Image 1 (tube, rainbow, N blue to C red):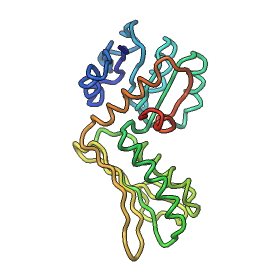
Image 2: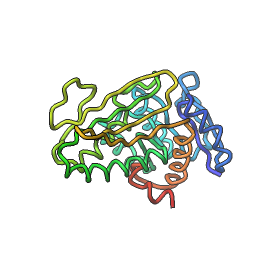
Image 3: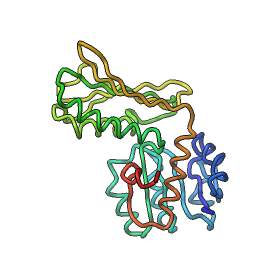
Image 4: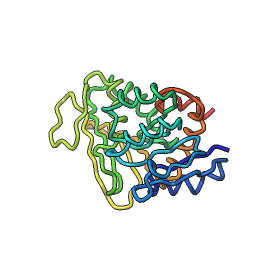
Length: 241
């Protein structure tokens, strides 16, 4: 049995709480702005699953790691400070695994996007567009998953070297990411390859938060007792064996 703390007790935290007992996890504590983790952390915690906000995530990681707790991080909006987080994890000798999206389906989608980018590189008549849609409480635009999708495409498409956000007229070398925020949308990501002749689309549409929660618990099993800084997608194939 792995004892997990839920740091951030919104809809994702509640979904993890719902399915955790079926996956041999025990919830050691639930923390949010009303019940701050820094003031009320319980000692019997093996792994913290962190879904908070970009404003609080670094502080939460530093505190949890200082207590010897491994961290699964689903919060985005901090990646420009990844060197800071790496130093925190190294200093405390703990484990850390993060993802823009822990959904198994999204990580399959990532691999499809990566392969499609390599193929489309040979066909310059196709323009590329990413669309990402989330609920109105999603603060960062574009989403971390939208950005990661762009990064996978940029790895394979030599005529593109950067991405832009919500641009009316993206430059030739840019991949445009269009972001929408709509009430009660869990998460939808679409890649369009558009030519004068046709459109090719790849879509992942989350029906609920269950897939994200299952992936976060999978990551918690992986990181418990490990040391170091890991990206979920880099160990994904190992996790699902």
